[in-house]
Length: 541
Image 1 (tube, rainbow, N blue to C red):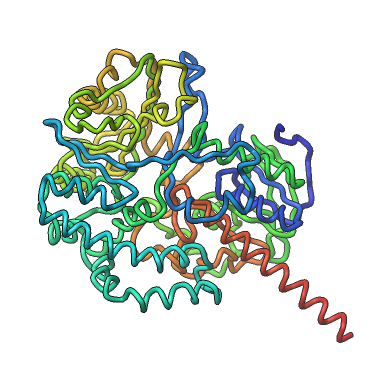
Image 2 (cartoon, rainbow, N blue to C red):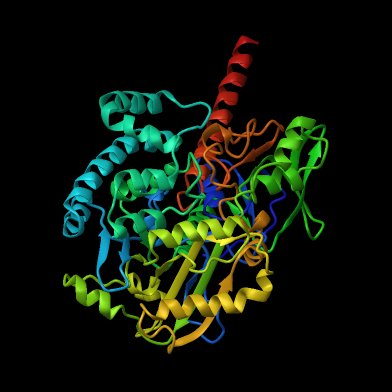
């Protein structure tokens, strides 16, 4: 089924952005009987989870252009709610979800079953094995609270949410109490207070590189590990874009419309109410409600005309943080003409695990500290810290037979470097991939082509201010009802007719679809409430 080219000028809901959150919202709304139009600036759906053949020399290598591995999505219920299996959608479990390598050959794997990780840790330190076992028990208690909260409304948690959260919190309060340190201590302090093993310390620094790890209140990032242990971690057959392709098919089957190559220039308003959008080509599309799944800062501070918001809220919208942590993404994709391997580390493990399947990292704990300190000082780290994956190993459909793709990502890279990124791009790409070739045998000799991206390219490719893949900086005070900013945390904005969703809204960015699902459910509830109210008024009349 192809995207519809027909123009639907009046819709119940017009959604800006055909990333996975925008399409999730669209599917729930269409399934509820609303007429839905989605407009997308790019030439295809997918947004930051697009999968495309980006190299002319390697047309059969499917490249995951943004995110790649999902854990929170597995708690969302979206696949079942929308019947995505019907459209060929399939998850591939990544277990272990992460392996950290010692340069000399040893490694430490993090499995869905934490007991298996504990068993591996005993080889390095019986004490740290006990400490990690205690830590993951505490993390599991946190999941009893966090998952219902993330699956609910940030400012109006429902009765079902409260029935799940409160008893769980009371029942496991002894395990939860130590985790109060998540919100007060630094990522560094939390790790150093509990663990000694260099491999474990390094792994815990590498898995959730969201915030400057020496700053108080950044330990919360370790919640990522809890999610992977609870829900498992997965990729999608055919690449991450398989999710948005399935969502698009669902939407079209339920009467929705998708308009690609349709960049929104401005939100149109009448009497202070948003009435639709003006496209870059001059075409105006009208709708009863506009739901923007793009960056909330772009929506509220650029697309919305000045003077619609009260002055204090307009100033607050302009201040939504997208470039205050001084760090950004380094993203490298490579098409490879043969099969990669990690022979030295595979030999050490002796368990047959293909190390090209999981996420892999190898930088030391000290490297991570130095990388953060360098990045926030606007300098390129001496040792870049990153993770690597061979996506085609778990899913061979992403490359021709006997060949691979390579995916690399770092979140510890200077956003405002003292030497221009354009000057350093090729040198950084060469340096990082040379290092990778010391672990991934064949990466240097079998490279067909590569793409090296940081903030400028990410901003252009994905239409996100400052190239921020989270839409809003992942700082501790920008979650729940404060995401993206106070007064804008309810999906429904203070401007009549305008709602927001996407990575910049509750609960977070990454591959989850929960912002899209939560926003759609809130909108459906509001519509039903209005229908009930109108019925009561007619009966009274």
